[in-house]
Image (cartoon, rainbow, N blue to C red; front, side, top):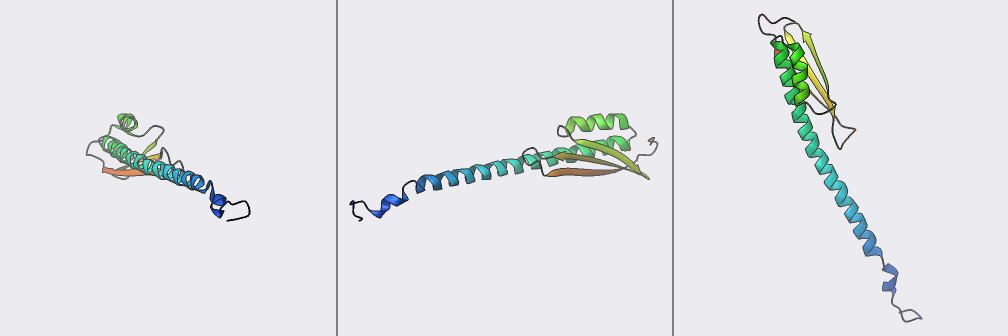
Length: 119
């Protein structure tokens, strides 16, 4: 006890509030990162599906419908490209993760051009 009769425990007042605020902020960051990871996984699956669809349709010779079909499957604002290399068609879909903007996701799909398909 000091001269006024108060104990030294009064010096720690408010520390629990600060600790609770830090713990709550940490919890919020952890939840946002988990949700971001789930959304990134979902976006990656959509990129894979869109690339596969674009490669498959392009290999059949239907390149005009390949891009539009891939756009329907791909995440919004995804970049879709299709190129030919010999007897193969390669489609690439690139997109940004929704809550993790520094993370760029991409998927490639390769399909063999079908006989009779026009390049």
